[in-house]
Length: 472
Image (cartoon, rainbow, N blue to C red):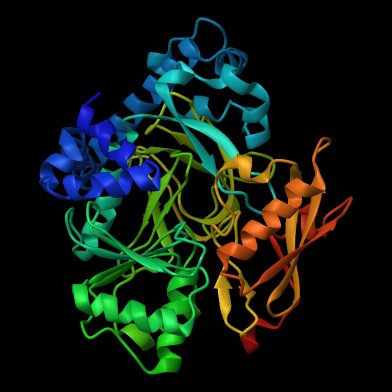
């Protein structure tokens, strides 16, 4: 484990005050050194696997067998699952994709219930991580290898390299950054990572005027962020009649699917800019990049993990065009194994993983568990809701489930089910905090309920939106 490989990830995840104090020094570190040796080594492997299916298949099988060996040796939870599936004493040097199908699909709830028994590495040697709550669920806490950052970035930059983006280049970033809630700052320049960070909360027309000026001032060519955030910025630019002076070289979306109407809007406002998307999980269990010139078709990287498409009964989907569930087995971070993990995302099959294609699953029309949506502020402008709620599970102490209901611009009711020991004061703290994140342009009130409104299959929408969003 390289110190540099760990240090980059530690810097990115450090508290804001620490990161800002270190940023000027980190910015002076040469880009090559900043990413470390593991990053360069993995870049070479990924590039070779893309053009050599035999190498990809061999590397995939080696990683799969290594993961199973480690999980069986270190995790009591997975040891029992593996022994039940393939029998005690199985030689994991012979483990293959066919054996993987014998294992049960595991959910977040299963892993939460297993606790530390799921870990294959001592907890103190791992990093804490969380997924932000989606569909009204509380965030999910899990653990990742401390040195995974360099490996992960090698996969990300391989995808971005297809549109010319390289380490050390600057980018505009539209994500849910925790910028000050007092409304005094909606943007910042991060010198160490060379990121112009623009807040998506609440992103008023006045904010967008400032954003365009900052983009022009720094002459940045690449735009990275939530499609819903980019869409909102483009809508404001279109209404204001403004554009960046420089032609962008690419848009690199994250966390959400890119819809046809968004691609059309991006082209209308920003010109014929290529869009290079990728699919990933906070749990680091699966990774795919969008095919060039084939919008919405994603190829999963076999060096990152073993991704399967299964039907509702858990059987492999083999018919192209048929929809199924994405189930992921991750190789990138193995201290807490994710083996046949239910991502809760759906997709349609394009090509099954086989030895001939290097065990590379291809799908289209990925439907994420967390669908992007908007709330509407008092002034009639949309507010992006992806990552609207903080990742920290402690933020939701006292709340078991929640859902946002909106029937009037600028007003949202947070319907919630308290935990057995939850208090009204805890719920009020959450609602007040969300009002602050929108700089007061949406006021959140509370409604305690026994049950949340549900849709098909009993799933609860993260936002119960009753406004006609076409009007805003």
